Amino acid sequence: MKPKLFITRELFPDVIDKLCKYYDVEVWDRYQPPPYEVILNKAREVDAMVTLLTDRIDCNLLQQAKRLRIIAQYAVGYDNIDVECATRLGIYITNTPGVLTEATAELTWALILALARRIVEADHFVRWGEWYRLKTGWHPLMLLGVELKGKTLGVIGLGRIGSRVAEIAVKGFGMRVIYYDIVRREDLEKALGIEYRDLDQLLQEADIVTIHVPLTKETYHMINEERLKKMKRSALLINTARGAVIDTEALVKALREGWIAGAALDVFEQEPIDPNHPLMAFKNVVLVPHIGSATYEARHAMAELVAENLIAFYEGREPPTLVNKEVLKVRPPGFK
Ligand code: NAP
Ligand code: GLV
Ligand code: GLV
Image (cartoon, rainbow, N blue to C red; front, side, top):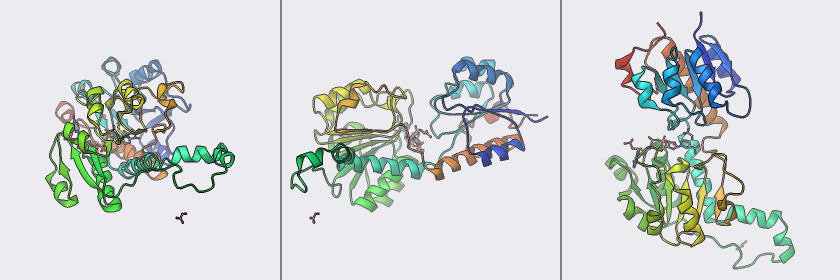
């Protein structure tokens, strides 16, 4: 008998077909995520799961999942999973690093450019007839933004995505780049000509601040009121990492009181964000619905990587992108 696999949302059919050769697959086929109770009940019955960042996989659920051996997360971030608890229970956790780096770095640049050149505001100006009503045509002072060349980009978290964003800044836009991370990356400092700063120094110096750290206990509300006050009044803040790295209430205050010049967000503390949220009122804020990895290329490669991890595990091999390596000491890979 094949091991049972529950997938919490529809993936690409070719990848599902591939998985069906190894697993008895069940897919949650609604557009909305399965409720916690549904995931809990499935987790009690299956040997393997594919989860999304919207699925809360806590220790309560993991402890009741007596047959569950592997969770293949369809994302690089895995802050929705209690990894420590899974490791103790001998449950393998895999993620999808690398294959979405380009997509997420490119979205970050789309947001930076959208803010710097007021693209969303300008589109509304045309679309809703304001340009036509005002009969402005071309005006020297209309919708002015800021240039990137020569400005300073501050990258928080110089990992896969952060370092690609930094590379594009240097090579593509002729920007100066400073970064903050828990580890110094002297190789990248040399290769890209970028410099390390501590977080507070980075916030004081940067014209544009972009966040690329994972959400952890340490990074939760890392950008709080005190830190927002350190930023330049002309600075722009970009977040394509996780919503809770920023204290949203503090950000609203910062925008209201003009401590910073604008923000672009792909991720939120509450997803989906309430359309009545105070953030909606600002013209100098760009909001997109967690689409960092949303290219055909990245999403398909993520699905392929999920399958590779599940197939490796099935064959008793170490999954290629295993998150909790310590689990190898608790239980060998495979269903035997
Ligand atoms: P990554 O390669 O692990 O990069 C994260 C970097 O942050 C690493 O250099 C890491 O250092 C550093 N870091 C960790 N904790 C830190 C702390 N407390 N202070 C300062 N730096 C810290 O991950 P990635 O692939 O670039 O992805 C980054 C994050 O982006 C993911 O975790 C995910 O949440 C988010 N993401 C969002 C989207 C989207 O759709 N918007 C798409 C992809 C990813 P160490 O390596 O030493 O831990
Ligand atoms: C998306 O947010 C991811 O972590 O892959
Ligand atoms: C603008 O369209 C210009 O020609 O400068």
